[in-house]
Amino acid sequence: PAGARAGLRTMAPVAAAVIPFAVVLGVAIDASVVPNALAVIMAPVLYAGSAHLAAVSALDAGGTALVATGVAMVINARYAVYGAALAHRFRDQPTWFRWLGPWMIVDETFTLAAARDERDPAWFRAFWLAQGTLIGAVYTAMVLVGALIGSIVPSDTDLSFAVPAALVALLVGQLRDRSTVVAAAVGAMVAAVTISMPNGLGLVVGAIAGMVAGTVARRMRRNALAPSDPRRPPDIGARTLKCNPDLT
Image (cartoon, rainbow, N blue to C red; front, side, top):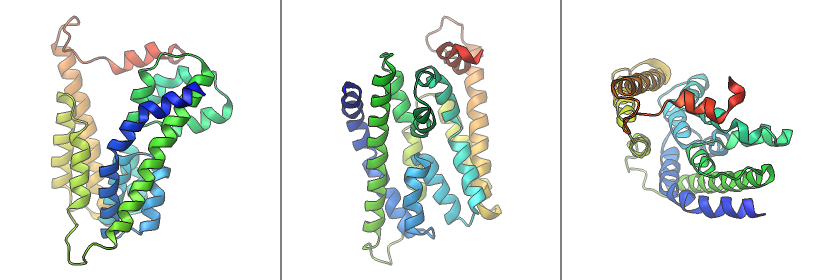
């Protein structure tokens, strides 16, 4: 179908860009206390690189499964906004797709889908499934490759830096404006201060602190600029309601 071809074509370069991160994560997984099989299975289940990495970090720090789940949920909270913005694209879809489709919501799939204006439900369904399957398959396969490569790395090689280094690299790629810089900086500082908390809870505290700081910074910048100023951050809530009138 035309939608599937468009999805594969637009997602191909994006999927290629996640390969280095996925491989590094796989190598770091092999060096962590988390079993390789469990960590690789987490890739398609979580379907989110930052949440996957944070969950592995929490488990490697001695956190419980509940703590790791909490960290992943906090980091993935933005997907609720993405889902609301895409709700009108899912409204006329079959029931099975309305259940399966949202599982593929990540930054990359949302960005590419939001840039398309085709309204045919069948076209969008094929486009969404094609792009989501491609990036999910590439990411999972490369995490597995990294875990396998990690087994041949000399045992005396210190890879303890790999997970935090990969997380920092992933975060840097998301620093698009002042509010995200504030969120990353506050989150990192709070996590560093609370790193000694038991069961990896410091990661949860840091993630929540970062979210709050980023939200406050965004609102302060928005309120300080005139409505006509092109530098004024958009109102995410208003934009979401505009995209999905059923939320009103």
